[in-house]
Amino acid sequence: MTDGSTRRSMLTTGTAALAATCVGCGNHSGGSSSSSGSPTTGPSASGSSPSEPSPSEPSPSGPSSASTGKVLARTSEIPEGGGTIFKDHKIVVTQPTAGEFKAFSAICTHMGCTVNRVADGTIDCPCHGSKFHIADGAVAHGPATRPLPAESITVSGNSITVG
Image 1: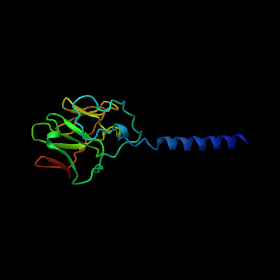
Image 2: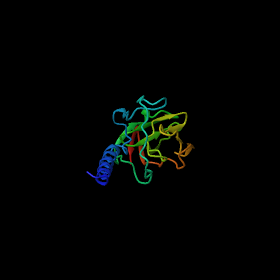
Image 3: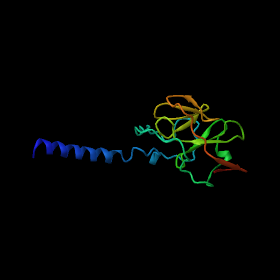
Image 4: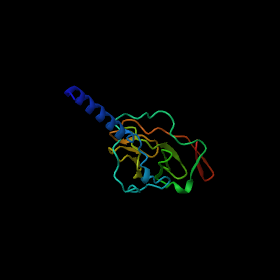
């Protein structure tokens, strides 16, 4: 084998290995740490360390993967002054003041990580420390520069539904 064909083989093999490794890079749902529906007013319920996001910038526009009309929770499950992250639906629902419910994308606008806790009036991202206000999704602390996009929810009686 010549030096040229060896180099070509190594590049092809290396590229294929890199592509196979990056297949899971875009999945930030956390798999086993999916504590969907559990209130997060303190430290992360999963206890696992955050994974780094893929290097590509996320597309913050467009709806989340939540299906319209799906009941997410009862109003009593969303702590006042806090919120609950629904990782499976990529939504965080907050209750900034009694009886006022807001919903935002759970995908950080900085690098696409899934936020992991709601505490002290902010929605927090584990990857680079971005924090967003629970009342309006605005950036409270960078590096994110864009707010969390609002999500559409409907509160009917004591049920919160998507859409």
